[in-house]
Image 1 (cartoon, each protein chain N blue to C red):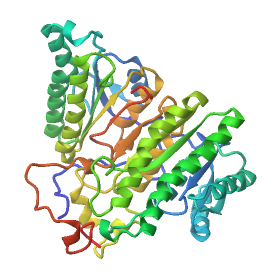
Image 2: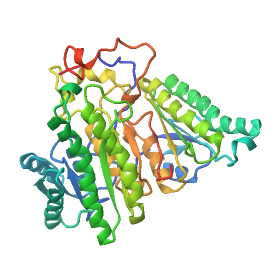
Image 3: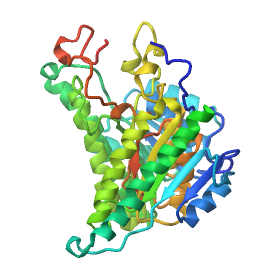
Amino acid sequence: MNGWLAGKRATIEGDSPAIAKAFKAAGATLVESEADIWVHVAPPTPVKPAHDLSHDEWRASMDAGLDRRFLGAKDFAAACRARRQGGAVLFVGAPEQALGADQAAAAGALGNLTKTLGVEWARDGVRVNSILTRETGETLGHLAAYLASDYAAYVTGAVMGITLDD
Amino acid sequence: MPVPAHHIVATPPPFDAPPYPADIFAGQTVLVTGGGSGMGLAMAKAFAQGGANVAVMGRSIERAQEGAAEIAALGVRTHAMSCDVRLPEAVAAAFDEAEEALGPIDLLANNAGANFPVLAEDISPNAWNAVTRIAIDGTFLCSTEYARRRIKAGKGGAVVNNSAQYIWTGFPGDAHSAAAKTAQATMTKKLAADWAPYGIRVNAIAAGFFPHASSNAGNREEGIEPLQNMIPAGRTGSIWEFGWLSAMTCTPIFGSMTGQVIVQDGGESLRRSLRMPDYVSPRERADGPWGWK
């Protein structure tokens, strides 16, 4: 991965040590703003049967798993357009059926949002992809670094997992 | 129409800057079916850029030899073979021949395929059988031959399959390939599950439009230049970026990845709007079932 992200600035919102480590190893600088790459990692939601989920819990999952992702990506893409530079958005989280009904809704929505924004922003040079997986280790970091890099210049609107369970 | 100048088009690094070290496949041998030309040759070159020796399998020995010569120029050992991947005995014999020439087959890339624009009503049983059985039976036969040898040797491995971007939407004017390429993707997931206990990973790339010397889709008098603007990404794919992603699924870099079908198509399969140009039946298209001859 040597040099995959050389000279790139990346913002990682949310917690993924594997992605942070891989990005640094690939030469990226982690920044809070003015980034070329925006990664959003949603935390796993508690697993509960749907009839035990309160509306507040449901809303919290949608906020983190969907709404914040859309609004963050929108701001990132606007900043890219203002700079007249391309960029890469990457959404990371659990697969659709891995947790509760809240995750099923949020991840399904996110998948089709990924496909939509990937095409809507294609001619701004802004690529949008998702990794929906239970994997938290090295391959996640490496795959995230690949998708954020110019090596994935022809990958946009793609939703993928890593393991058989994904 | 050309891509407007104010659009930003993401481009990959050049061919001589692969995403992995030159020794990532050192000491390993990959067998690439359909490796003599086109997308299979791109896969084979990508493995060679990582130091793999390459067994090139093709229907035509001449084409396999031509491809092998290009691959050998990258500094690896090669062996060209002719094989009909629809015949289990022929596949087994080809594996024997490859292993005799280059040693055990560590990795497998299934690329063998045929494709051409044709109306469904004009697909003869022979044409249907050729396209579907090369991709479906061929991928099954080569993969199982490979897996049996790896399992017997007590070694893991990796397989990558060349699928296509139209596997979820259908492809009017290309019914045989629409069926065949989807079978490759769906069998990828099940083969990955069957062989996970043996450490054999199986993934597929659902490839978009990567023009090359032998692609039907690029056969236009004007060349491929007028086609760039139809792709959301603003360009057709560079064939080496397809080769790289294919090979990379077989490296330890993506060591936990299995059962995945990764779409690499510049957003082409996702184009959609509520108002589009009038639908024209493949039968009534002025210049052929694909919209051009």
